[in-house]
Length: 328
View 1 (tube, helix red, strand yellow):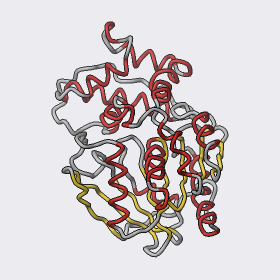
View 2: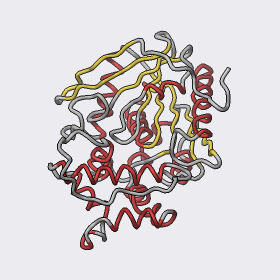
View 3: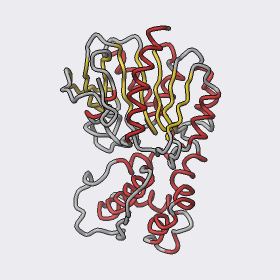
């Protein structure tokens, strides 16, 4: 029996750890937990670039589920780390298809939040016959409107003091388009340039992920003589810039236009009422086009999966979707 104060299942060790060559020079890190004969479920991490963590397996009942975690291209323990070449949404969907066949699975449950929701939908709309069900958190559809909101307007409106820090460290000539200014630095091969930008970007985004960020002070340097390695520092900003600068490698409104392909798939969306990065309007729009989807708005909650109410809701959703799958 799980306690509300700690709804996660106990930590367990993976029964399988492997690396899978998927082509294009990429090798993906993969772990499996739980019951090898259980309902297959793949957890899709966020970012892009976030990487998987063993904690993510704990939202699943290990007696019911065969739990699959993997690091997407350029992420976590996959190789090459931070690799951007041949790294697009289409490639990630193809990797998922490859992994499913490699593990000899006919169908699986998709679970993902934020960018993980984007990837889950991208896969499900192309391969609906291989999807048992979907659980999403913090729906993100990869549109320019959402990107502009998440990286600019949300902070301007709700955390003007944080936005001021994010912008004012830049030279005056670059402050009209700060996201592109940081993106140019993230693309610079010199670690003395890209690492400071990555640190600022990461802390800025993390602050907006929390319902109540505590006294956030962003770094105020854009050049660090001490930075000497390309692969130190946070990974996510590099992958995020790569994807958002290419419209997440999606056509305009692609995931909404193709939502018709989800028609027979049961789904549950867990959505923080006060999510600043992925606001509820996006989840509601998707749910209106997906007949077998249930939208669960979680009060007094933001974006992060680590918030207690979101965590409880995710565990409940993963349990409930199992029952829906068994009944279908």
